[in-house]
Length: 226
Image 1 (cartoon, rainbow, N blue to C red):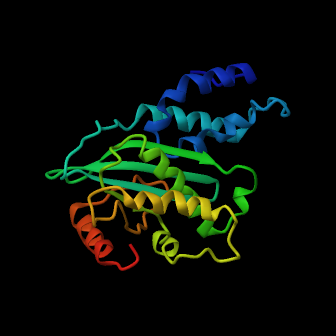
Image 2 (cartoon, rainbow, N blue to C red):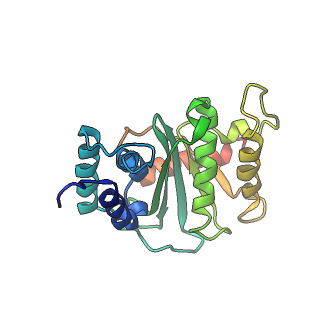
Image 3 (cartoon, one colour):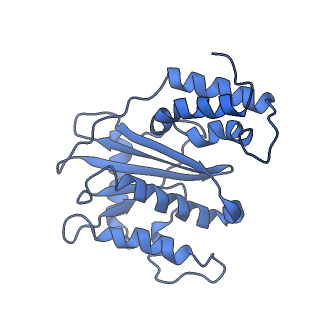
């Protein structure tokens, strides 16, 4: 496939590959250079960034991740990984049942920062990623199931302190309410959301082995902040 030669062809290409959005990690960040050349205020210029994005997204599509079916039941474990990176937010939802070494992905989402979001503090960015990730996850899985939130910074414990520090963005309270209210889901006396902190290499697919998951879930269940 040859690269687009004008805005209309670029828009058509982006429309054609949009189906793969949930199948490709960091999709929005990968194709963001292509969207730049489609803006009305920008002249069409196909440079090295666009060519790299075009080649990368085609490569990603050839190795697209198959999404697993949504499964329900008391033994199903759902893990929502969320992250705030330099160029945007990303999150992915994974599901695992007994007997599986690795979980199956249910979806990948990402978007670039909007407006002043790029100027948020690291904590604010992580909370925003967790909030939007949670909203996406609850559209996919049963709201009566337990969800493990796996950010790269410990956001849940900070939220449950009960007050928002004055240095944080005013809308933090809205994001915090979105997440903490969802801790009421699940079985009685059992938090609907637990938190595990992950530290995985940039660009690598998030996975938890059985041993890693059990250790971190146990730690989360014992935590007084959750």
